Length: 394
Length: 98
Image (tube, each protein chain N blue to C red):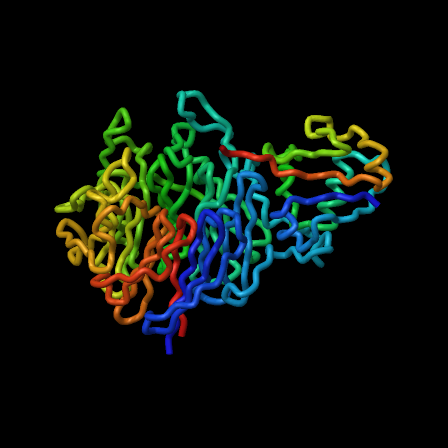
């Protein structure tokens, strides 16, 4: 019988929630890495027991963790205690090392970006926001980091190299941090085309490469943002999250700061599909596992008030790829609810019916085993949830 | 042997107890102690000082013999009591917040 494993990153540790295919009774393990900020955990599509996790702290910096047994045990890749180098001679402790590429060989080493006061500011690594394992190789994994950059490991997380063509894009000096920092928070690998990767940065916008990361182009045509001097500028948009259904890699859905958007041409142009949403500010967006035109968002009141409208936690579902939305409320608090749902904190399983899961800044993880019609809290009192990912296991 | 007291989170990362003991060759300084610590516990690389610049992380402090050595140059000799192992070097996570 199928199983579901939900990987939850919180402000004070990671939790692994498991259930059988009925998704009625859940086992909770954790906190793993208690006391640390766990920005993201994600499993390899090729080897579901291979999990990667981003562990960080304002005191101790960034640590990458890896599990090869589905989250029961974890190690820093390539670093057992007491050994100074690998058999190949590589120093241990390299798995925590994210160093921006400033070599002349890679084209355009870039050392500054725009700061809040308009001056130029050096690129400074702060943390890994998102880990995206390769769909074809369990040892290859991408890391989206703050300050915005994309790194790749081809050795199971032991060492990381920047794909510096992104940061070296000509628009780089004009990128500016959003309120949450200048984070590269979304990494989407095209399952049909290994050369194509989509990424999104707050507050630079969305970018695409078609040559496996050597060169990048902004894909923000059609976005309209009132908070930048030129509302239709090529870069500068505060994209909060992007989602794709693997069966249609050219169709993208975006939750921007304000506005829910859709692209049918791999990001070359976007149309607004906010339709009848009560507010189109929000962070998460995701796609049903089996219905590529069914999408989910959690509307948030505004950029100044990061909580649901009227204190009612409502997921909105569109079965038409946007524009026409219905509120999903059964099992969700409909009064006095003032939590937020952060950008990486929603995911779906691939069972039939599709399961949908999201976590809140109040520490609840809600699950629906019927595509959003009914919700139940799986856990209610975790630390604030930063990310939710789901694995459907045979 | 040099004695070093680690903050709780680094004990967990290093799979070590509160106090670790290190062999340090040559002058006993912040740099030589941290070099020895990272050699013995490579998973701590980057958590106490930056991987590249080797600068102390801003929220960590180094205390020895009831004095704060955090702002001393990294090659300044530490007190004899540390070098002899009579006193431990304390790596402290600074209190931050309200």
